Length: 327
Image 1 (cartoon, rainbow, N blue to C red):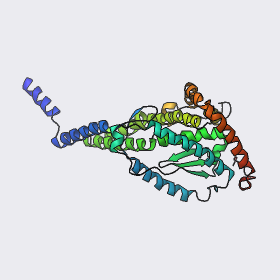
Image 2: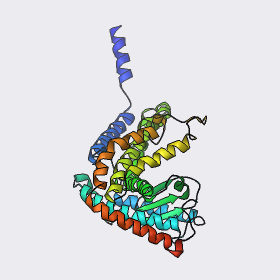
Image 3: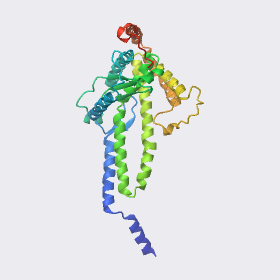
Image 4: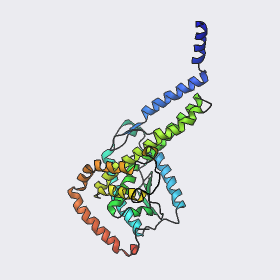
């Protein structure tokens, strides 16, 4: 009886070498890579995995930028349109603050030294697309897109600065590269699950599990990080950081139909790519003191006066006359 039990134990514990050897090799490589490619997000100091290079991210950003220009060519507003001029004017100030941010937060850890870019990022481009969708986004290598539906929520340059600061923060923190890095790791683990379980049972639960436990939390974390960095960019550029809270409060009201009783069923926060409006607004309250300290600095008083003059000049400019931001 004892001998039979030992035989059963040996038979159950011995996996074929064609499974054990690759599994051990892949696992060891994964652990080494996870350690080797550890990186620290700027400003927040968040630890994350980053396996992509800045140059590769920029090439992908340029490729997508050309594709979107072709896709939306009939709806891109000319550079002389008031909306385009406003976006470029505010964007230029935020991009200057972004350059300062890079200088201040440029750490010299081993990861960045080994994957230092061989080419510098391009100057920011600003593309305004006629669309009812209230949105803005950024591509690697500094390509900012603004959809005109956003102007339902953006009523001032301070409001616009809050949005552009958030989008540029995504680029500064290299969130696109981090998402691609996560995708690479998930793909490796998915293939490993098929190696361990060729029937695909592990694979069938791994994919939804990775979405719920990895992709969605990281996406929400990126949005929160961009909110945090974004209000500081706006404040550094002498735009009122309190506008960020105002913009999201307006979006919350519209999304809830004004009173929250529109009958729509909205996903819970843990099932969403973005934090809830309540979470974001509470975060702004928590961060606002430090951002307001920057905004209230003496340098911003003169700059705010110059901004007013620039706005008045833009309104009188005949190239932009008769055109509204509300499209």
